[in-house]
Image (cartoon, rainbow, N blue to C red):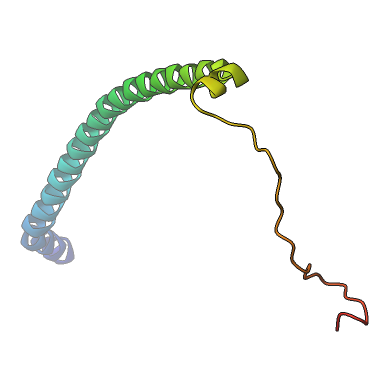
Length: 108
């Protein structure tokens, strides 16, 4: 009987510390849960905004690509001559010795 009373006395002495430790842990875990839940909801809202922005920019890029292709197809020789393009009368090439991996005995 005395051993049971000693055990109860030890539990009473340490019970307050254990209770407050567990209470603080539960409070911390609850606060962490609420914070993470809030962060998750905010990220979901941001993701929706980003998806809208991506789709609008994709549409803008598509429009610019179609304009580019239409302008590219509208360039003809007639338009080039009208803008001042002239054909080359004489073709000139730069003559140099080729430097390659294979060389003949006379070149070395």
